[in-house]
Image (cartoon, rainbow over all chains, first blue to last red; front, side, top):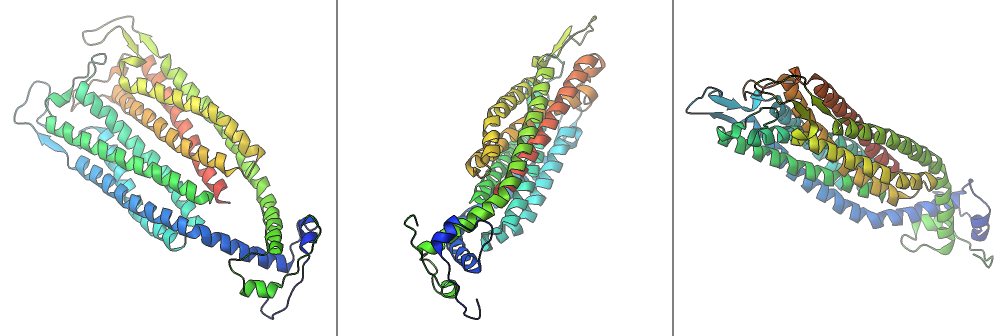
Length: 208
Length: 208
């Protein structure tokens, strides 16, 4: 192409004849048309990538908020009874410890994923970065859901107790503790909903 | 093209000159090259779709097994103590009821998704069906994880109890009940891992 050589091809022959063998002229025409097609979707893909980046920032806020809210939960009661200790802390219950670990991992991952999201903005056709994000987003959404759901199960038990298993509702004593823990669980579920959106959006962007 | 007309194009001119305007000859060459390219990936995509179908069948077995194992759990003790009732059933604990509902929905969805998976096998380039599957798979994997994790949190509590909250380990009495419930949770987590693979595989298939 650089030498200015011209290739003559017969279009009617092309559409019927050659199937696998692609001549030089066709390859060039193909590349030109493909480039025009890609430019048309590039703007749209960039918009999705910017929205992806903003959603990631929101998810970081939600996950980090949930981690900190749960990790600093600690309540000391001014009195004690036959059954309850003076103090309730999040690490008394393994489900809450898991919640903190899962949300901390999610926050860390989301911060580390920001550069890849920026790559998707700068180069809208970098499907490799997008595929990497969709794979790890799926893993992280599952991890965060597991942490939030197990914490929610324990919070429900703390609020309502269970007469069949003879588990008492501890929230009647530890009201502040329970409110803070409930807030952390809500924050984590917000992060999960955002992460689900991110997976679906990456899928739509990969399709085009 | 049908009239047998032949179009002569200069490839050197094409690559430098025309950017947006695509002549008829180029469009045909483009279509032919694109068709050749698509045939190359069709076989690979069909392989992924068949693997997707088989994995879906495995996930149905796991989710349905977990639902049935949990839904039929019921143990009556031959004795009773001051603290425990005669009978333990899965619907005594709301987390176990949620587990059954979540896994039943997942099983139902997976059965309904089989026709779409077959569409992906028959028409490997039907990205619409694949996108539909990735969206709903993401929702279902989150729902199933929430059910399994909350049930796992309660099962852990039933096995170990919690001294801080004064919750006793009921598994010392209800051994059969606890074993069956634990088995159901394991089955559900197997279904979750398969569903995560399905989401990632759909993402990879969409990329090509």
